[in-house]
Length: 245
Image 1 (cartoon, rainbow, N blue to C red):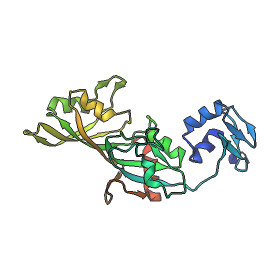
Image 2: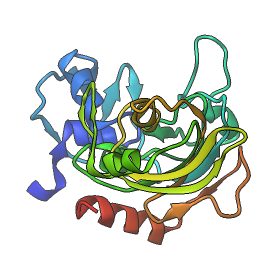
Image 3: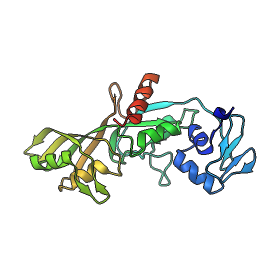
Image 4: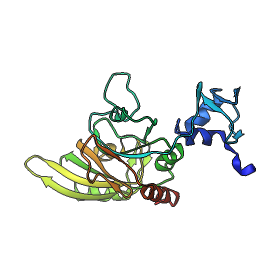
């Protein structure tokens, strides 16, 4: 019988309501009830038959859904925006299941974004200790020099610490336009990290697209389109995260 119990924050995360970390905050703030009683202790365990409510909303165990989305530029990676700008969930208005973005892509960055209702999966994909590789293509102002490529490959010191070694490949350099097209692969996900890495050397990023996330790419999709991940793809992503690759 003991195996049927699970931690309350995990139950909330698995429902797709929010991440486990945010669930812990909600519990501590007294916003979670189990069978009609407020619970504030993080170690609390619940069984499948227990009724859990968060912020007055009863949790329902939904089927897990995993979506690969080609995010256009000038779209907010969020569920809503108080300034009325277009958000990624606007592309899924007809979906009955609530989903949430996995990590973030900047407003001006396009490319591969995952969305899901699986909080545990989101944690695996975004936690700093899980090193899933993400590939980007950037169009820079100016020439990216050989010594700058070498520095990026070794790691540079930004205001929030040293970056992990990156893989960098120059695709094209245009002398007339004074631009560089470069491919960079990182295994971190800090805020605006790729842009900041190039700006470290004085190169403004004119255009940025995430083209790959682990084994996934944008094949067959146009901007604004998405598809459901196969069970095998989800399994591979979990394996990569759990094995730190």
